Length: 140
Image 1 (cartoon, rainbow, N blue to C red):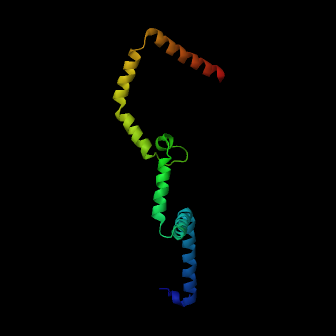
Image 2 (image 1 turned 120 degrees about the horizontal axis):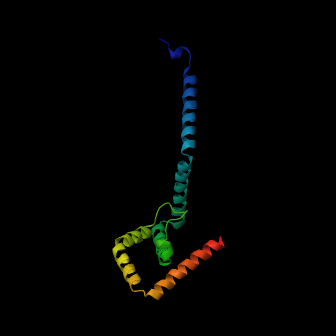
């Protein structure tokens, strides 16, 4: 059996342990760099915000939230997710659920509206769609 103490001193063992710790820490840090940076930035910003608002941050944030809500538009509340949104807003999700729930009513109304068209109105609508399609094809 080999005795490590015969070959490596206590100082060398400590140096090896420190070096290995640094290597693993650097490897972990580089793998999670963005998360570590985000967490550090969040903590720094939170402390700075608390210092600036001097304990009144909750009231200021509440007032700002009310201001933002009062200036919302149907586009910002019900707009579909785009390249900047990670997921659909609650407004968009609820709107889609409402539409899905109303599909039988929508279908019934569309069928009734089409059935109420006269032959001349139907010809005009179809003619307009054909003209639009031909113009679109010619424009390409």
